[in-house]
Image (cartoon, rainbow, N blue to C red; front, side, top):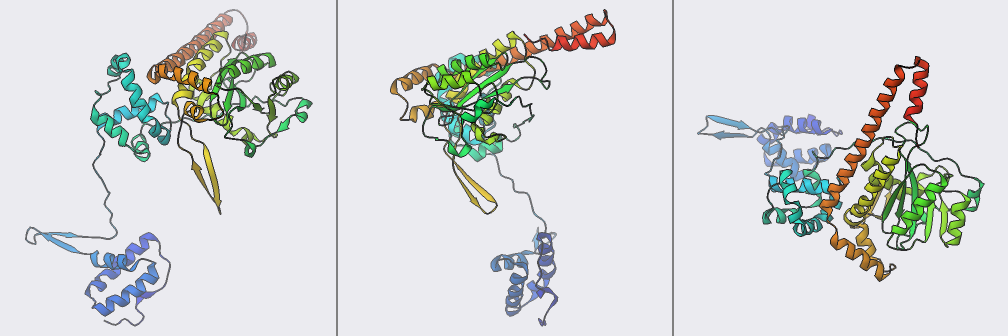
Length: 451
């Protein structure tokens, strides 16, 4: 066999499928060659294919390999280009997966790392309030709880949780309408704070923002949700207001401020006129609160509250239009339960470090912990406040809170559906009275009658 500049020694760059075809073609020659020729073929092959020498030798020796079964009557021939799918048996039982999905829904579809950190707590709360929910769990067709299910849930990793919940994870993303309007010249006297100027170790500095519930049509009066979140602990309070008038927003701010388990030290908002006004500025001066604002058109300066606008407002009340007093009262009832549910039982992760290597950004996050756990770990918060939080935590049942959240969400949907039926009936009444032009005008007024 002559090896003087053979065709298979060309130094070219190969794609994956080309490498497989290359090996498939020269494998018969390799298997018939002597030791010296095989060594030479491997020298050229490693340079041409950029493969490990031992791996290339294995591929060449195994390609076209024939295995005879049943005394030589049946032949199996291997092909390096064919790959079999790897399948392994499921370690976790279907009963364990059913409870995992239920815990995931109780924590309102949180991510795998956050759910993994809360599984021991949910198991303890399940045992504490088992007698209250036994009938409800049977109605949901959950399997009976066993020690095997508990041990498997405790041993499940975050990556396994991600894989087993992949089919259950369904998300719908929408985009609302911005209701921020420029404030007065007073904003020139209010300090600007960017996203890089926050102290994450000192509780009390909060970001706040308004979320509009206009339903895609910003005309007329409609409800807003004032969202307030602490940067250090991620403790969040939400209050619904009839409109975004300064008086309503200021009353909601005072109500949310009183609910925090620690005194507030500073307020941060966008440049909207509902925040940038002399009334709120004088209040911050009187209460010795630091008042700061975003840079114009830089929403990332309020990155903490912008994330909460989705996870704690939009994901629960949606993008529909709410413009009646009954709906605002129902939203506030929902937020009263939701503050206990999210602050005490929904873990959050905070960014510890961000490193840029060329075009790649590597992020490192801290361990998932609930806002309640972060409050208990903070040395700046008074002991009396921590004791009150702990006493309340001992009485809370996450499964009952989850059921109450779902009930209030359904009630809010029913109020909106009833409002739509009333609107349709009003349009039908107008059809019998006036012309088409008057009907459209009066119908528009009926839809946006507000308060």
